[in-house]
Length: 284
Ligand code: SAM
Image (cartoon, rainbow, N blue to C red):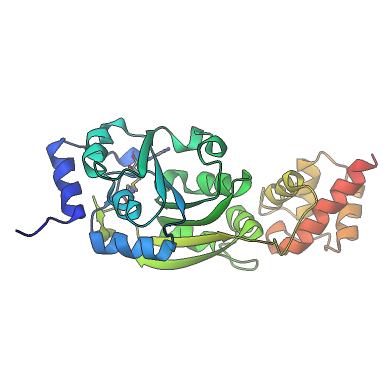
């Protein structure tokens, strides 16, 4: 007798337990074994890797990864998935599911060593989660996430692109980021109204651009994108409650045109600017 696929096991477990998909939790599941195997291939994780999965859903990706990696820790917000995940992961001794909101979980305590992130991310937390993963000092080897295609395009945009935004700049400071697969709505159950894309984000081993004080740099970056119609000088003045002549001096010393808009300025110049502010504040 043919063994049923993991995807079919997941479908049957969802049906048997009367699971109802919740749109507000971004519940669009991947239930096709081949596609999930390809996503895990793209993640390039192996038997040395501890993996954090955010939102395991019915657990198809969790079970497929558990056969390839050292351990999987999955954070799922929806307790209604407990019996489904229990069935799916019955034999997966190296997988643990924690029922908690990933946005409120202390990831440094949960994943104290080096780890990779692999997830079909609930789209409503994409930007906050990626920012958090990159800026919290976690020891992350790579992040492979399914996101909405438009979000993926924004996240991989460069200075000068119309889509360039705070999230793209933050990612570029901390990591390299590329789209590695495009996925149509028909791959999900239920089908979303949008296309999706798989992003692979690999934190820089050595940052090409580095600011002395990263918190201050993030404040500069946030200010640079705060009001897109205003100049960087205006946005800085507001964010740092600094008089105009102080801001002018910061910009001049960092070699940035006083009339420039934040989104048109290269990361290396913004890092110089942050260092300039850091130095001038140190002597204040
Ligand atoms: N990984 C599964 C798959 O590919 O089939 C499910 C992906 S589905 C897009 C997103 C999952 O994240 C859902 O299971 C949902 O309940 C869960 N989720 C939503 N918000 C969450 C949060 N804040 N913390 C943890 N899990 C969350």
